[in-house]
Each structure stands twice: as C-alpha cells, then as structure tokens.
Length: 228
Image 1 (cartoon, rainbow, N blue to C red):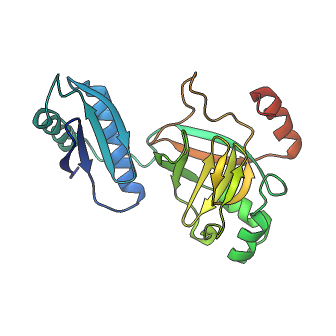
Image 2 (image 1 turned 120 degrees about the vertical axis):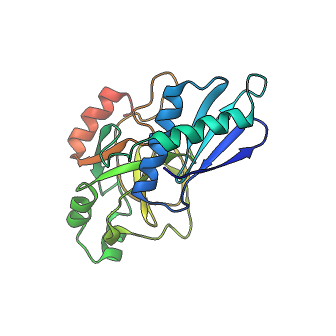
Image 3 (image 1 turned 60 degrees about the horizontal axis):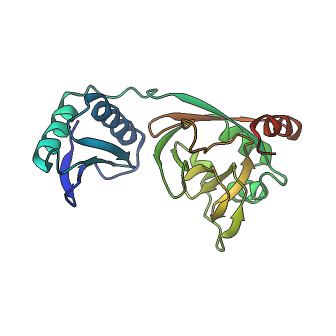
C-alpha cells in the first residue's frame, strides 16, 4: 500500500493516498485506519478517515511526528490488498417518494427513468462509506449508479428532516439529523442514525444497503425507534 505522510500541526500525521475518489482507495483508507487503531501506537489518539487520506492524531507530550509517521508507514507497507467486501454491511430501510422523497420525480425525469426504476437502481447495490462529515454521522457513499447522477439543488433547503436520503452529484447519502442541505431528496429512513449516547450504527469503511419500505412500515419503525 503506497502512502505519503505529512505533518498536520504538532499533533497530527496525515497519510495521503492516491488523490481520487474510488472504491479501491476508500477500501485502502479503511484498512489502514483499522490497522492503526488495532496497533495501539503509543501516544496515538483518534483517527479520522477521509476520501483519500487518514489523519492520525497524537499527544506531542507522549510521542513525536517521526515516531508516529514511521509506525503508520510501516503498517501501510505490511497490509495485504483490502477485500472488496470488507467492513460491516448495514441495512437501511427507506420509504421512497411522496412527502418522504419530494425530489424523486425530478431525479427520475433527469435520468429519463420511471420513479420505480430509480428506486430499483438505488436499492440494487451496496455503497461503501468513504467518510463521515458535514454533519455528525453523515455518510458519504460511493458506488451510485451513474444513471442516477443528479445535480444538487440550485437553492438549498433551509430545513431537511432527519433520516432523509438524497443524491448530490455523483454521490448518495443520508442526513442523520435535521439540517439545511442541497441534495435531491428521494426518500427517508425511520431509523435514529445518530445518538451520542450509543455506539454508531456504521463507520467509514462499512457498506450500506438500502431497502424499500411502505409508509405503513415506516410508521411502525418510526414508533419503535422514537423518531415518529
């Protein structure tokens, strides 16, 4: 695994991969992230994976840049090629269209497809979580069908319901908490995706699979999750 390392202030090492958004790069970042956390490098605290880099934070009173960068680089050189299906597979139920996905019709028209075909394609593949960002627990997902690529809204919404599933350009993702946003909304999940009091449902490197549910199923799950 080929990386370059660079300092980030006096408390971080940035492991830089080939600079592109791609399935194989995301898998390499996730593999190195897991290896660094498992190695328990002295002085190292949190790790922050991104599309094509991994930030490793350390305590400068306990170690230094050279020691951490050397350990990270050594781990990268020893890692085997990552498996395409690495990471947990997390299933996310989604009610598509209507009030749950007000932009589904636009996405279908832009793609020259029926709404049913958009749903079929969106649920027909697994998506790797490249990184979490923008909001707590917001997963940037790779692997969207190219036929569903849709521009973001020209005028972002000031309020989007928690659980909304959207398409923005070449990616799809989920708004785990209510917020402003500019992605095309095609559905919503009733799951409570972010709670600082419990372990996260997913992490960078995991994969997400969307499944279509009815409004009735949405209501039952929302009541169970406490998101109704």
